[in-house]
Length: 174
Image (cartoon, rainbow, N blue to C red):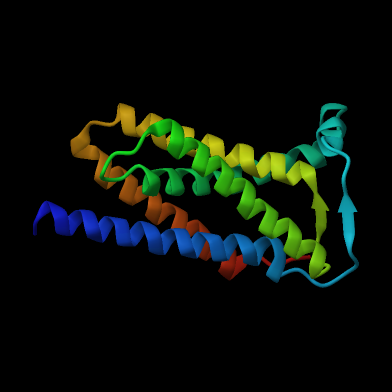
């Protein structure tokens, strides 16, 4: 098989896993939740203040949001920086903006469908997660030898898919 065919197959797998991931995040944050009432919290960093004052419940929620968006930054960063090589700064900015917009979609749906709390802190946490995911992708891209890079990224994408499948199969919203 030619290098070009392997590249196209890897890119197609990345796109499929990214779509599966996006659906899983929407399912987890919006679709699986029971309808309630419209809730909104417009005070920026209110949950961070509670976390830093000792409320670890909010801390785990913030860390969970950051972790949930790490794969977003990793996969979008990889898609944006494939051949031809694009400028890393522009790819990083586009990844962060995309993470912010995807977070906005989630928060907007939660508000409109009455399935969660619309809050600015989630925008911050999710966008930070996307930025850190991009940073992790960039670091691995720089540190891994080219001979290991494709197989390592393939394994990471498959791990993201397995986690998504586990969430879809086993998570039940309380």
